[in-house]
Each structure stands twice: as C-alpha cells, then as structure tokens.
Figure 1 (cartoon, rainbow, N blue to C red):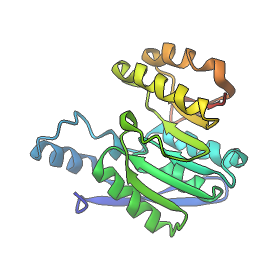
Figure 2 (cartoon, rainbow, N blue to C red):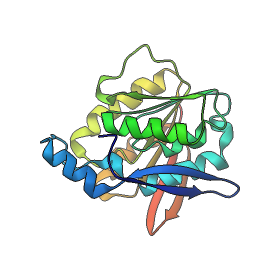
Figure 3 (cartoon, rainbow, N blue to C red):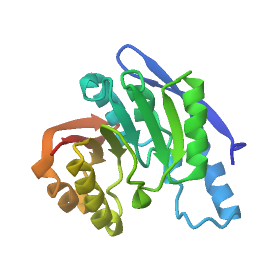
Figure 4 (spheres, helix red, strand yellow):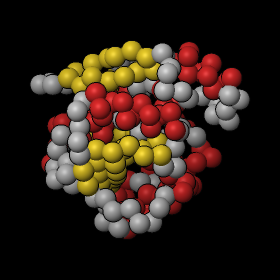
Length: 205
C-alpha cells in the first residue's frame, strides 16, 4: 500500500518544523476494505493529538532522551520518534501494521535521519532481547480489552530500569488504567491540543 495517496504536512514547534507524509485516510480505509483486513479502523494513519503533545513534550524535556536508546511502540506515523532522534543516540520506531512502517520509513527519509530505524513490532509479542533506555507510547489506552496486557508490559519494562513516556488523552474509559500507573509516575503534565486534554506521564521505577 505504499502507493497510497498522501500529502505533506509540517508539524511546527517553537524553533523548528518537521515535514511529515500523511496518508489519505479515505484511501487507507478503502484499501483495508478491499483487502478484507481484520483491522476495524487504521488508527495509525491519522496524526492524533496525543502524538503531537508527546512530540512537544520531548522538545521541552529533551534531557529525558538525550544520548539514550529510544524505542517507540504503536508509533503510527512516527512523529515523536522523528523529534526524539534529534537528541537520542538511536531510535527504533515501530508499529504492528506493515503499511504504517512504510510511512515511518518515508518520514525518516524525508527528514534525512540517520540514527533512526523503522520496524514492524507487535507490543503483545515483544522480543525480550531488545535493549533500550526510553520507551515512547501515545494514545494506546483506548481499548479496555488491551489494558491487562499493557499493564503487564509496562511493569516488565519498568523492572528493567527503562523510563516510559506515555501520552494519553483524558478518556473516562482509561481512567482506571492510568490510576494503576501513578505509583511510578515521576512527572505528569496536562496539555491542551486542539480542544483535546492530553496528559504526558513520565514513568520510572
């Protein structure tokens, strides 16, 4: 699906802008329907407020990723990773969807990034051999059927001494999920982005 209709957008921060290839959402949905994909909705194909807020947060708190090995899971279009790569020693940006990974690859090429790679990774089947210092995740706690698995993953990652940067919109369905993480939260900032309230949490054990 790398021939999908797309357009270029610029995500603007205080002193820089990041060009980004964005797929046409209707074209993506049509392609999924034609292929009878099991995915109910191609969530990766949209730039969500939580990803935008996490990107701005990384710029303001670049010390959290500076000279670190960074992994982003469920990255979608990979915007937070693109910004993190400016400070990190290395970035592995991933999504479970193969087409999302193609767009991540196009976006890192568009930005001429050399210390970042794209990979197809399902967070429910995380390789135990991965070595990284910081995990990025945004807008992942929207489906209650995934909450137990995510909590288990977070606990395992925190036990390894990894810092987690989690960006999440304030959804009622995710309130209990977030409450369980507060014991490891060393920083919690609330931001407003296009009328959406988003919290960024720094988790560390």
